[in-house]
Length: 253
Image 1 (cartoon, rainbow, N blue to C red):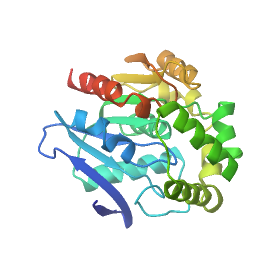
Image 2: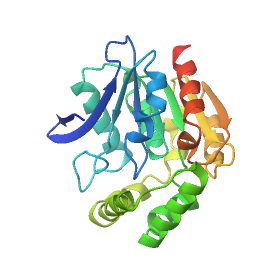
Image 3: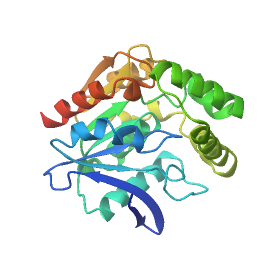
Image 4: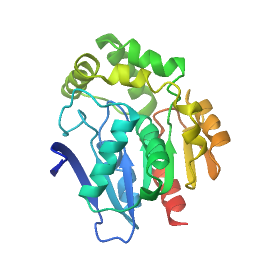
């Protein structure tokens, strides 16, 4: 479980198939960590690609940081990580908040992103997205986890629940994440989305409340395909093999 220093910050990174000719870098979502990819999706991609996963700041095993959760700062972090790993350009995929980071990365650093896969990126201006940020409580976490278990056929133990609760509490009460996300509410209407030139695959759950966000992006990005996968916002957990296979085909072709 290597933790490396990137511009003085500790970042947890995992890599598979380092000898492959091309690299796919995977960005997880808010309040998650790289394990969402590690056990199911990453091994599919690693049959053909060097796969890099990392924990965002204050997530997983990466260092806790009080500020810098706006998309400019998050993509600065990702660009610095690529430089540290000596990766000049990669195929990039991101889930949920990681999808927003990936979109911003493709717009700001086009030379560093080959193809782009966006999984369930929400519209930051959508009421449901803001509600999650504004209305967090322990009761919300317990409700969310119950729903998570219902839709993914998996259960979260008491220890993991406590660990996640501590992470939520830290992020909501001791960092700038709430104010930084509010600042990004107009991201989907920004001209930089229209300027994304990379070939892009949008993957959304057919019953997801974020599907409309995918349809918005399909209208704005020039070289884009939107694919609906059976499931909701948790589709990478519900359908990891399907998501992995779709990304493998997209990045290979």
